[in-house]
Image 1 (cartoon, helix red, strand yellow):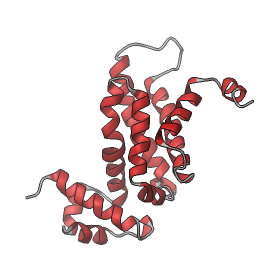
Image 2 (tube, rainbow, N blue to C red):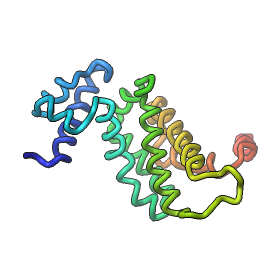
Image 3 (cartoon, rainbow, N blue to C red):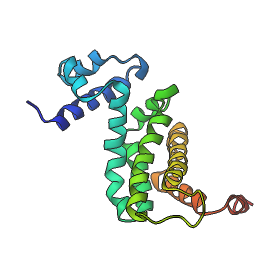
Image 4 (tube, rainbow, N blue to C red):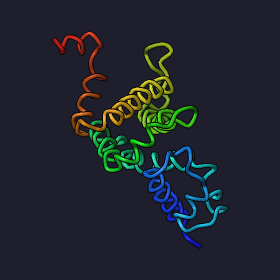
Length: 187
C-alpha cells in the first residue's frame, strides 16, 4: 500500500493538470483518479470531494511551507514565500480564483489562512488577554485572514503582474499604517 501523502500528491497533481484544461466545476472525481492512476474509492479515503482536495493543495503547497517562518516571527518573509509559491503555479491559481460560491477560492483560502494565523496568534499570546475589550485571537485572525486573502485574490486577478516582493511590500505598508497615512502617501 502506498503512503497516504504520495496518494494525496498524485491526486493533487492530476487535479492541477485537469484544471489547466477544464473549468474546475466540470472536473470529475473519475478524471482525477484516472489521472492519478488510482481507483475512485482511494480518492474518498483521502478527500470528501474535489474542493477538499483543493483545500489540501492550498494548505500543503502555499501555507504549510510558511508556517515555520511565521512561528519564528518572520511574517514578511512568509508573505513573500506565499506569493512566490502562488506564482510558481500561476496558471492553476488563475483558474482556481474563478471559483465562486461556498467553494470559492476566497472562502477556501480565508478558512485556511485563518487556521494558520489562529495557531500563530495562540502560540504567541497564550492565555494573555487583550487590553482592548472585545479584541480576541479569533477576531485578529479573522481580520488578517480576510486581508491576506483579499491581497492574494486581487494579485492573482491582476495576473500577478507585481513581483512577490512588491506585493508583500504593499501588503506590509497598508497593514502597518492607518488609512489616513496610506492616502497621504499617495499625494
